[in-house]
Every structure is written in structure tokens, then in C-alpha cells.
Amino acid sequence: MLYSEKVMDHFMNPRNVGKIDDADGVGEVGNAKCGDIMKIYIKVDNNIITDVKFNTFGCGSAIASSSMATEMIKGKSLDDALELTNKAVAEALDGLPAHKMHCSVLAEEAIKAAIDDYKEKHKDN
Ligand code: FES
Ligand code: FES
Image 1: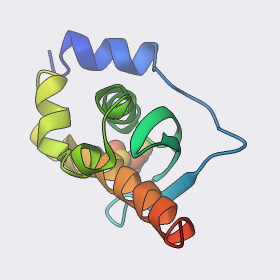
Image 2: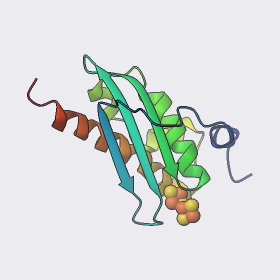
Image 3: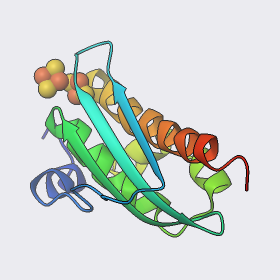
Image 4: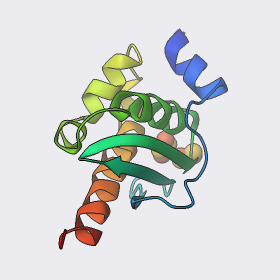
């Protein structure tokens, strides 16, 4: 079996899909390798990520990685979320095939972009 049960589960029933209209930070990244796109929205309160949603126009592994990554950063501090690596996401999914590792990079980068966006917008307070 190419994909773990966890990957299949997060692909078939992705968590935290959607958009946050009054998001505090938004990150959008494209994957240079395949052209897929991921957008992540975060709500932040007192440096804690209180809510997160994502939209991914991409393959199953990208969807599963985003779903898992959003679960991993919800309730975490911004600093902790910044430390989330695509490797940790892939491990939490019980592994991804080697040629699909680049899909999980999208989740890591989109989260970093959303946090950067938040910091950029809130640097004066
Ligand atoms: Fe086909 Fe990413 S290259 S979904
Ligand atoms: Fe490109 Fe998965 S094939 S994100």
C-alpha cells in the first residue's frame, strides 16, 4: 500500500477545510515542483493560534498534509507553530512516499507565510 491509513483518512475527511473571513493572518504558497497551491488562514489570540483553516488546490498528499498540519498547530503558540517541519507532519501521517514529500513542504511553508502575514500586520501593537 502506497499510502498509510492516516494519509487516506486525512485525504478523505480533511480537517479544518475552508476559509476564515476575519483571519488575523493568511498565507498562500505555490509548489514550484508541481504548481499546486495552498492557502492557510489563522486566528491569533495572545500569541496562540486559536483557529486555523486551509484550502488546497493540490494532490491527495498535499490535502492530507495540510489537514494534519492544521491539527498540529491549533492551540499552539506562534513560536511552536513556526517550528513545525514538513518531516514532523509526514511522520504524524505515518509517512509519505518519497516522491510525495514535496507535498508536505507546502503545508509547512503556508503556515510560516500565514504567521509572517500576522506579524507584519500586528507589528505596531
Ligand atoms: Fe498533480 Fe500536484 S502535481 S496534484
Ligand atoms: Fe504537488 Fe502534491 S504533487 S503538492
